[in-house]
Image 1 (cartoon, rainbow, N blue to C red):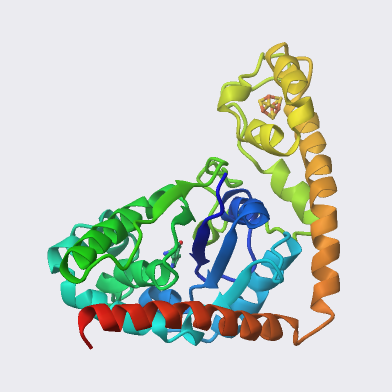
Image 2 (tube, helix red, strand yellow; image 1 turned 180 degrees about the vertical axis):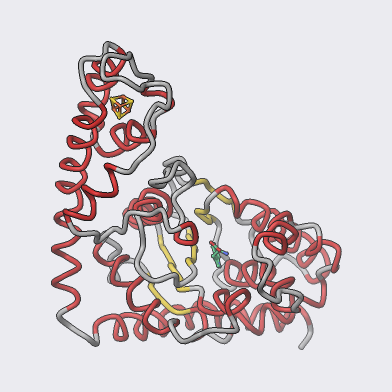
Length: 326
Ligand code: TRP
Ligand code: SF4
């Protein structure tokens, strides 16, 4: 596969959970093996919905980046940086805003959805409407060709490509059209049957301790029609089995067969899952604990990353200014 320029970002939500790990983070760690990667803490993005309370922002950034490192992102290979430290994103966002019809932003599906879902927060702001375009600027500042995202983010990639076509048509070929690629793992269920999400409070943290992992796995939703131990189960509708497939692949077929044949009970099946999960998480917890010993580590990494990111973004912005005639 040819080497591509990859950019992706995450809002600083603090400690990550298994859904973030199996989704974005695992693909990032994999991509950094073969590609030139820029991974960004989207702190300006956090302000688009969370501007009223920013007290946790700094801590959330540190906690999230520690989890990135514990999960295997390598700051030597990949450029890890904070969006707000590379002002070129803001300049490009401004320039792109001149050529982006308002209707393109208004019809981004996440816009109306989030307005509805996050009621209680005042989101009738300019920043909230414009944040998909800020995301386009994040990507285009590096002329990235590949953007790993979750499914909910695909409309933002579509918008980015439309903006690229319009910009290039007006000012000449400056940007490549970036391709969005989906994370390999499907959405992970949380402990209440809904999608695992920080905002639902139904998550298992990447660095949850062994006891917490056991308690949370015990709470997970299984086949609702399997009421008695002797009832045959349906692993294909069971959230615990989703975990077995992901974290315990080599035993999953056996467990599925035992479940269908009522040879294993749900309590035992969950115990196996929790033990397996703890085995998988142990090295991550250990790395994280070691990384925490150095209180300046994250700051150092993000500052060094910002220097590298700025260099690339500055080169793009020189081309952009020239193309636009500034
Ligand atoms: N908007 C993305 C999210 O909420 C985060 C993000 C910001 C991003 N800038 C990006 C993702 C650029 C990919 C590329 O998840
Ligand atoms: Fe799910 Fe395991 Fe129970 Fe089957 S035995 S329903 S896979 S928890």
